[in-house]
Image (tube, rainbow, N blue to C red; front, side, top):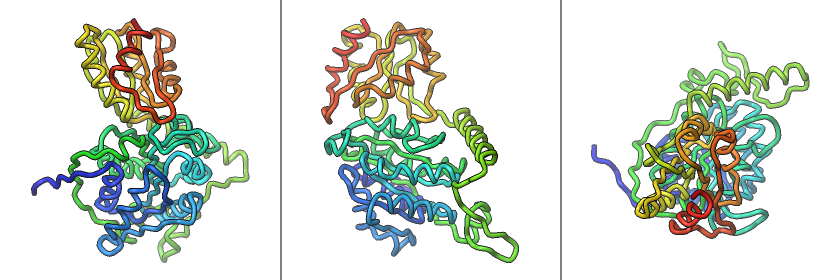
Length: 359
């Protein structure tokens, strides 16, 4: 069967991939620069073909709680928003993590703080990778750098969410959401029937049957001792995810003298900066974290003994750089370069930052 290649925005790729994955439901609320996700779903009308429910909720808070309900019944459900909208969803995201419910969340980041700007940003790193909502929880965090990865990470995000019964998030910046590229769409896969859900997800609240008790889905536990047991179990699960699910890309890192660490669209810009720097005799490698959590600390630590210095290039004031510094533990100098307010740096600016901060 020939590959189905389309030219589309990253946001549109998310929507098409969700339909083809066999997602049961999408609940969202419009906000720039991610509104095309819901708009595309509405245009495609998957409720007429795959049976997928697509609903514009009355608010971001309502949307995330609809996701909670759908996830609690064992369905593959998702939501999407942009930075301020994700802030509003944080309580519900924490509830999902506390109830150990799988769900897929998409955040196409814009600048802040506050309402900020509709221009792209990567300043939700803290909000997402560090938890965002209350409590000691983690989100499996995938950072796409292309429209193809926007499509691919829908299936990966859902699969990881169900594997570990934990919410997963696709953390894209506005550039990746709005840019257009060729994308190979995944094949259609069928949605699970209710009987298949009961068999594959025995924890789900699908009602009481003859041979099955009624499950109760909640993140509430009033007994401190049992709440501590829950948290200890969560932490053990997070250690398992850290052991098994770290993903990253190394671009010309072997024998590099200097290392750039960048994710999303900034990794794309840094690849061009790498070419320009090498043309000037500066031997630079690029390491791109694909999972921001679990963070690729081990491989970054490995390069701390091989390079002269590192620079974390981000579309923010310096957030991921903290994790890079923790990974190297003082063994090598780590600098930061970023632009704010939605201004995207050029490859030349990155090269100049390397010269000024590392050489």
